Amino acid sequence: MTVQTVELDAELRIRVIDIVNEELELDDDELTEDGHFIEDYDSDSLTLITVVSRIEKELGFVLPKGDLESLTTLRALLLAVEGCARNA
Image 1 (spheres, helix red, strand yellow):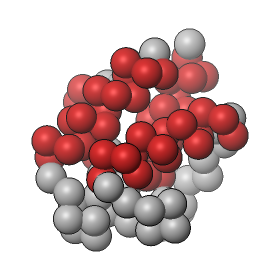
Image 2: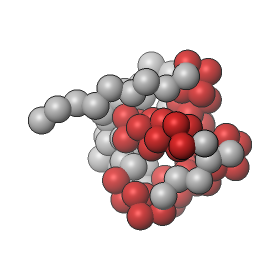
Image 3: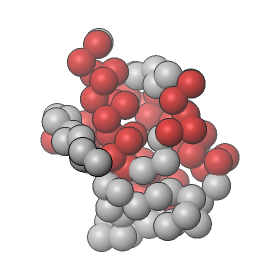
């Protein structure tokens, strides 16, 4: 399995991480790129929807709704935001 590398602007990356940490109620050192939001951080689908909504509202991106089920790790979320940023 190939791990995709996220090449997101540092400031944008920090803002996404901050949103995830706030919504999942995590400390900065708890979140990893490959930790599963639901399985590893005891989150739920409603929290993931809130994370995506905040990213869209605060950062001005529209993440593909069909991809929502695949946005279960920070890496997947950062890659989705990176894709939106490239297409903006």
